[in-house]
Amino acid sequence: MRIKKEGNYMYKVMAVNAGSSSLKYKLFEMPEEKVLCSGVADRIGHEDGIFVIKYDGKKVEETLPILDHTRGVELVLQALTKYGIVKSLDEIKCVGHRVVQGGKYFSHSAEFDADTEDKIDMLTPLDPLHAQAHLLGYRAFKAAMPNVPAIAVFDTAFHQTMEPEDYLYPIPFEYTEKYDVRRYGAHGTSHNYLANKGVKDYGAKRIISCHIGSGSSLCAIADGKCVATSMGLTPLGGVMMGTRTGDMDPSVMDYLATCTGKDVHELYNIFNKKSGFLGMTGISNDTRDIEDAVHKGNERAIVASKVFARRIADTIGSYFVRLGGADLIIFSAGIGENAPYFRKLILDDIKEALGLVIDYEANEKARGIEMVISKPESKIKVVVIPTDEEVMIARDCYTRIVNGRI
Ligand code: ADP
Image (tube, rainbow, N blue to C red):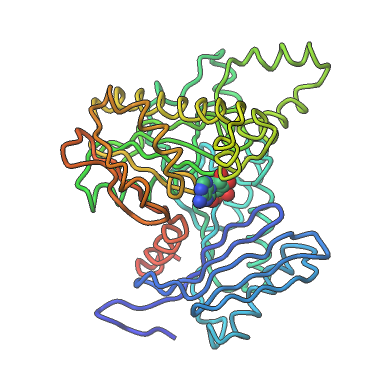
């Protein structure tokens, strides 16, 4: 059923983010961008899986076996009719899937067909953590709703506008050519959302967006397009994160292999999952725990926080140069949206060089809400903007439907 409103048809579309053990979902009514429900099938593969659905201000949570993604999708679709969110699943006109790595193949979103499936499969070595999980999520929805078109929205696509001098690594060129080794970046859907907001709502031409959460990346944006980003071949690159090292001298790998007897795969795993805040402090990957520890005087938490802030400050400085100045600095994601303590650490590192005048009261207040945290006399406006990757996926679905592209 299509309902016409103000010259536009309204459609329900589903945004999906399938990980290896979780499947997050959000159902939108477009073009209003109204969220009809959202939730997660979590602990997939376990007898004590967790299924959550939020709708109409209510939240239902159940613990039950969710042994695979297919079961997770079944639970989502059953819940939609069970709680009266849709009368029939036919109302859903498109399913948009978040995909982390689009490699050299995708500079835009794509219809999720057999060709897209093959390419994502081929990209698995570049994203062993997510690629197969995305495919599991896609196949589970396809099996349950075979006639509903699906699209893939790639985290890397927004970064495909970078120039070679921004994305090439100085390694033997044959490796670049033969194995497609280069900077791809990640979090592109979030940076794209923030870029749109920065241009539309703040009139900014030169934007530095800081998506800092458990994974963190920065992006330099000129006229709404990415010119540089901090994550690299994989999301391990760039600034320090919850459990990831970010950039460091590549010889650390060889040296530690010699010292510890561990092989490259073990060390790679440690750099991905046991480093960052978790590795430096031995406390947690979560900055809420780190902040508590800082307030109790924990030396390692204090120095880790400073390293984290310094890496981000250095990247902001280099993007300021790359963009020939900046009009807007955006903080977003788990830490960027909710942690005044870490924003202050970062801003105090850059404020003198960049002529920032921070409104510290506003910085304290800005928790999960959009708010300007610089004073009018600041040379660059600084703003907190909650990101919304799902709405970008929903917009993509909607545009394709109304343009007849799916
Ligand atoms: P992801 O989507 O990559 O899982 P998020 O962007 O949601 O990550 O960020 C999650 C992280 O944000 C948490 O691990 C924690 O470090 C940080 N975070 C979330 N809320 C707060 C808060 N209120 N104060 C400080 N840090 C927070």
